[in-house]
Length: 262
Image (cartoon, rainbow, N blue to C red; front, side):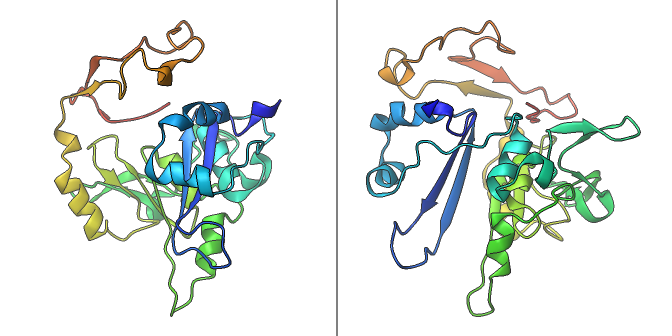
């Protein structure tokens, strides 16, 4: 099947300098959950600026895929960043049970060395998140290992989910994710002794934690061809019905009002 391409993930390697003999100064890797390859070609007429430039001037691989049978966030992101199967990189699912029958997340780590930082107070939670379960190097690690004093390198992986950020930053990059309790971006002690000033400033300027609801609206008119997909209105097998044009309430009385679990 030609459209087996990176489903349900879409993996795009963006270079600030297009194919040339020179090394790029910046490389951006974007991973979009549940974005099948045929979506990209179908929606290309709506693209502008950077992504449109890449399509027109870059190289597009239309039949890249990973042939493992666990298309979940953790295994997929780890496979894309390491080039290995789950049996080799160690992230065999988003969650699993320990030999003692305790459920754990794929990015759960020793709280003594990887405690999550509360982005509001600066203190640490009692649980940890880090790359302790990843058994091999990733592209982030290899990139950082070639850093030199006169040409220092940095890797940052940013996501709404901790497992997405951690499985791409691995051990030598810096993972940043949205804290489900406060609604601010955070990390863990594995990556930072304390959150960097620029991240604190971002959290200060963007008062996500003060939101009471989020309104979900379409970018284009509903009859636009951008939404001309088969079964686009079929929610029979979805966790919830369409949220288009509705407001999603944020329950601040819950323990994790901003959590994104799925």
